[in-house]
Image 1 (tube, rainbow, N blue to C red):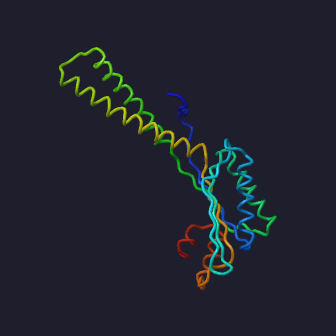
Image 2 (cartoon, rainbow, N blue to C red):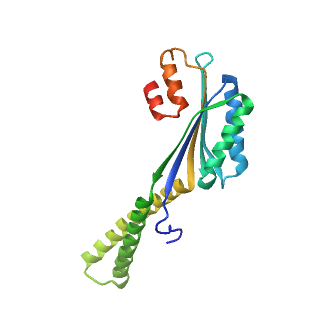
Image 3 (spheres, rainbow, N blue to C red):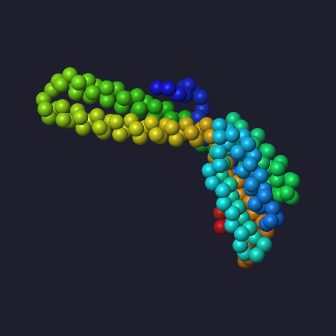
Length: 205
């Protein structure tokens, strides 16, 4: 079918995460700046998935922005986001890149799709030529309906996986100060946050 991936090309879906620390009143402006930078690239390159802010607990504030960025532009765009934070006294305190290799799942799903399409064509042939008994024709009709469902499902899986390969997910979080009662966990959060470790956030949570 169309858009099939050349054999041997690794199909990796990347997820980027960036964490910024900045004064609470600077969170919204930086978040808006980052969102504008995404929109300025156009929907072919960057799309905003979600954007939210929470201001509470005195001087503690938090915001997040989730983007889908065209894979080949994602790393350089991440650097642009980090550079923009300097203008509002923001500091990049954590960053990470994770890749998930979807090659095998994509190849398997393509093979399944081809096999199901062949089967459907055979069943359609039986129905068209009205070969077989009534019960066999009824079974063929049921078979076509079921195979069509499986074909639709395989096509949507393929579209979703290819989408994840073509557009990297980018999660950007913004945080100021420490939540009231953050207390003794804060140094742990800082220590791990500075090396961008998922572990630190798990312990702090």
